[in-house]
Length: 139
Image 1: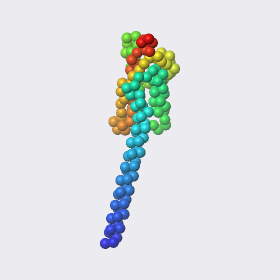
Image 2: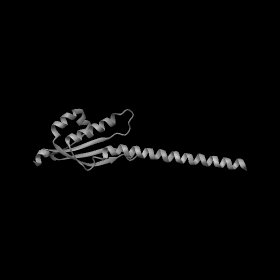
Image 3: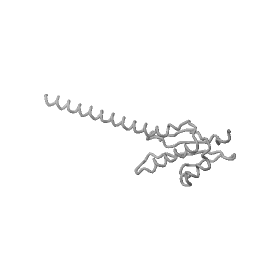
Image 4: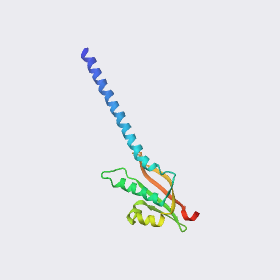
């Protein structure tokens, strides 16, 4: 009978320990997700210049280039220029040179129109921007 109670106590302690480790692990993962998302969520619904967009693209590119990284972020930018709407992906901008984007769109004002999240990981995986106007259009 004495051995039965000791066995029961040991099994209970193991189960409680397992639950505590699970809770701590879940909190760590949630904090990592919050930290990851916050570096991109700060742009949501904000107005940015072309220079700011370049910085956001660099941040996303650097994130995506990390070895073994499975949490990829993409950026689409809708630009209205001379009456025509075009959507450009960050990879295209990066491959053509961010400095060229700065030359042509550095004086444009953009707005983040939305952020999308991966349904499984709950991490940011897409930012969408659109240009509002060129800064000199309002002067």
